[in-house]
Amino acid sequence: PVLPSRSLAPGCAGPGRRRATDMASTRRTPLACFGAAVVVATCAVLLRWDSEGASVAFTGSQLIAARRPCAAAVLTSPVATAASATDTAGTATGPAPSPAPAISPPLVAVLGANGKTGALVVEALRRAGARPRALTRSGIWTGSGDGRSRSSPPEEVEVARADVTDAASLAAGLAGCAAVVFAAAFSRGSSLPKDVDNAGLVRAAQAVREQEVGRLIVVSSAAVTRPYAPVGVLLNTVGSGVLLEKLKGESEMRGILRGSGSTYTIVRPGGLKNGPAAGFDKLQFNQGDTLVGSVPRADVAAVCAEAAVDPENRAANKTFEMYEANTRSGLLPWYGESKYAVAGQRDCGAMLGALLDDEAVTDVPGLLPF
Image (cartoon, rainbow, N blue to C red; front, side):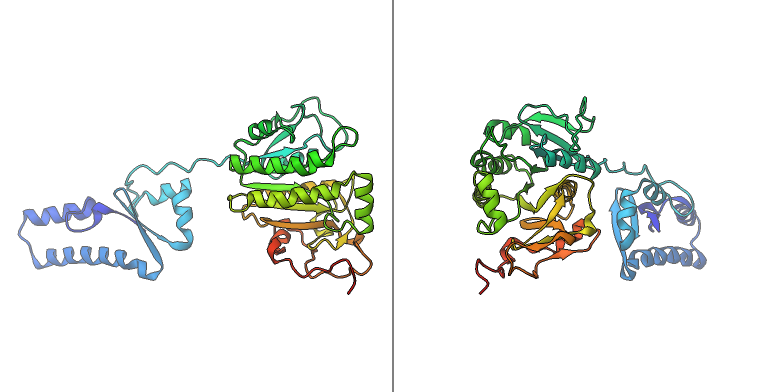
């Protein structure tokens, strides 16, 4: 119920006030006194309604009594606000408050947006309702992640220049962003892992802290902490020590962001493959770097987008491996079941929420099986 504050006795407006005025200009009778008492008692009952689960709020000259489960709808919905601005007799008590302004989509930067995975992250962010900013070394983005180039980027995609080896360009590229996805990686023949996967990530983390970007999502790799595993030996051999450099960069990145108010998420996919996404319910996440498998790039992109825009930020300060569950195998023969594995859910946010913060992941096997 909504009552105009002027309807409270004594001196109330409308029919109540007219009655009180009439009584004041004539001889007061017991019946008139009784009527005034009824008005006062009725208002007192309404004011005491809060004891039955109502919240009472004053807005200008209005007294709004709204039950708690519906309070938000009453205060934010234009229809409900208009209805609550009219008393039970249909008399308007004042203009309805203006509706809350629309919330603009979050701006999320993607470093390495011309890469196969990075281009797919841009597309995944569009589908997730974010506003992507594709950052490339050239300042040109025409990729779609499927091997086909675009003549021009979609209208909702911002394109800018940023080079992970150039701190000034990173600061400019990340300005105003709510999150950034680091999908940059060294390119054989034109760059080295120590400059991109290590120092480049460190520079990005410094820019995130300086620009007060809320989240940093890093696309890394499985076996980063297992250089002695067959996969680790292979990748470090053919990739100029890429896993070793990634590990150094990730360790320093954590230290830079610690206590800054910015969070990190490290996504460590297994063997990347092209093609359509398998879907969240076909994936498995694990912590401890003991299991590996293959995974479509499209699924990696979708998980990064979810980590970037999840309202609850359930991936904050977590590191995990991801792969299709039916391709899973141990990095070493004695790495079997994992207590940290999460799988079989269609809701990616729920899977991210089921993972543990990095500091809680302690029970992991070492090099030897004993």
